[in-house]
Image (tube, rainbow over all chains, first blue to last red; front, side):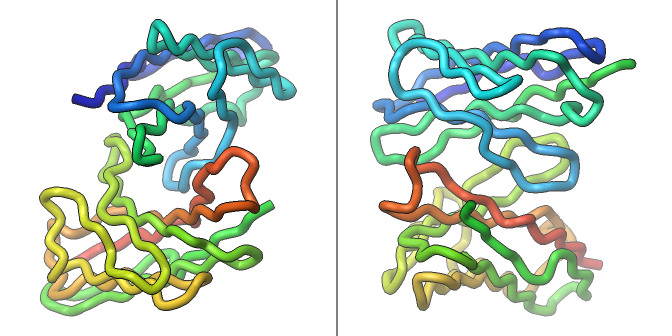
Length: 109
Length: 118
């Protein structure tokens, strides 16, 4: 079956760095997306990885290891506005996104 | 960037009535649109996938006669919740994908519609 595993909740301090891990199992693989979702709002696109390695985009970086079925999202210089849920969503062989429940990130001053 | 709108943003209705939710891609043509439902603190649940001009493909467990989806044009898809009941109260989100406009083939999400059935 298809499965996503992320921590349910994480807490970090403003200005710090946090890494949100994701392991996945899918039927086929066409890349992995990270989305941010604030409470009561729709998800917004953060990053996409299809090849192994690290993709850096400003304060956010995303890493992928296809052989391990593993990805992480790294957030640097945390700001209060980064408090949100972070969704790891691999795309299967049918180009469908597989969604987990996401990781709720709480930023404390 | 690519913008997707939804209307209405929230709706309250009586049990037994039907509710229509519109999803529009404002600055691109959406070859595929997706409808999701999300209950509090739960993951997005894909309800159906629709391609312009063809019938929607519903996920297992989603009643196609209750959740009517129409994708009549490349910029508009509608979801009609027929004979809504309190258990249909949820956050309904559409997303759109297009070939050519997106570098990553990502889905662009609408802002969502919060449905409350009394």
